[in-house]
Length: 72
Image: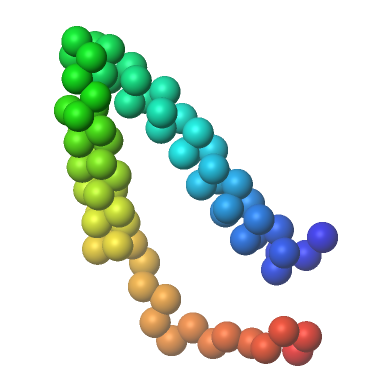
């Protein structure tokens, strides 16, 4: 198996892993706050938005990367 096929598949399944835990986290937060699902959802959304922002701003830039054609 080459890295060209396993990397996208691994990344896709990693996203599924995080998404699968999302409902459990939201339900646990809502239960802790007396059944307030709106507050739990808002906290999860804000947390993810902040994480995406930080990764985007502080993550490495791939400037000057040379892409190769498939099969070369």
